[in-house]
Picture (cartoon, rainbow, N blue to C red):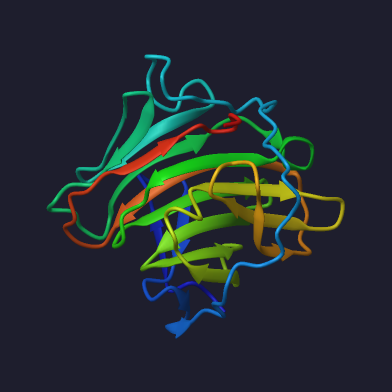
Length: 223
């Protein structure tokens, strides 16, 4: 089973998703997010850390900024803004593509998603050197965890309850979690695939005109 659409943002990374929020046109498994953890904080010890308030080029020094067909990456007010134009097309995108390897098992991967407007595709990706990846993605009112080919879990997207996204690895599994506050985490899904050495990417894409920005903050910074 393959995700129906795979776009290349500026030819610099794979961004896979199904425009229907499922696999091959079928709805995903859905359901409520379950499996709440104890109040475990994030761990801001990665080589990839950004408060988006340093006044340098967005995504630097941990990654590279990519823009396609009117998409724009910028920092404003201490936040990362991914703009997609009102005249956006299927290939319009704005992305930070990671250049730095990190150990997901040691440090986890955390992002505050302030606003991911319905109608856009917003993704936090941990890509393995083997070419596969783990992705948390908001799309068409769903929050989806997939591996680039198969949907692993999904739930109705709630911008308040799902404001913080986290990917982490144990010795046996890779786990996707969400939190309203960056402190009390609830499991979205997990997979038995494990490879802690990954690069990080943050993407926003649009199929058609939209004109609302994606607003992000606190990459691997505790609340």
